[in-house]
Length: 336
Image 1 (cartoon, rainbow, N blue to C red):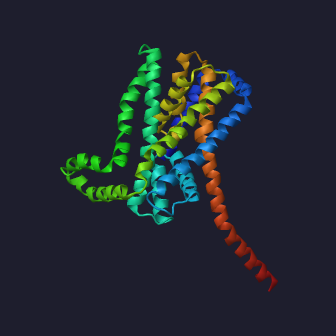
Image 2: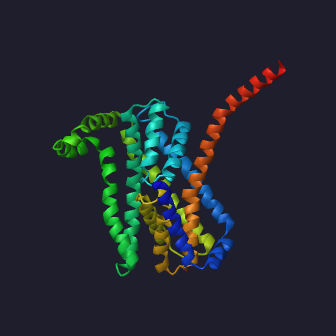
Image 3: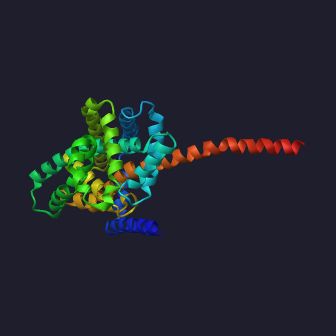
């Protein structure tokens, strides 16, 4: 019931934005959008889905040599579907990934957590680098004279340090454990976690290919940079004139706000943040909302649709042999 109410809240927020805009102008912006550029943005997002699965496979092979690309595609599709319908800052999807790694592919608990943590460490490290650089460029250009600039500055200062905790632990497990281990041992509730943390640290330290971290970071950076490229294509399709730095700040800050577990998939919060940041750039409300909705369509909804179709196909494929056997048995019975 709570999930339904939160989803309704997100839809209501989006509806309020549409109500505030001129609906006729919004429809006109959609109608005049260049279909070729929108199609290219969608194609780039499909490419990024494959790139993310490849990133998971490369990291997975450092923990378990039998890790395959098809396994990572299946795991990511299932994780994407569940994280899209749960307001849990992606943790719902990560739980599903850990479950599949352990139950379907026979990974140990420590290996599963290590892989998920390593991917998040690489992903967050590169995202932090891009967001910090763009936020500095944005504030250098506009200063702190607008509410939007204050939001950019405050969110960068508050959210980025929080996102640094995961990369610090999974990239430097031994050093991080030496710092937080003694602190955790002071509380009785955390002492139960320490053995699991020790196993995780040993698994991380035993992985091969530690010298490949720069390559992983470069791949993660390339995947993240596809997001502002998609934003630039959508802005071009709508005729929005904005610099790549501005579009990058809008895209990533909206993405970061959407990660806060308020609504399923950040529905409403993503669109609201994007519109809020575009208006001071001289973008009309209808165009800003059209940009936010199309960017959302080319990222969140496209990922959700692909994952739903993939899982639906997998379910159908698993049931078809049973249906065929039942049909064959029925034919034999009728013949007798």
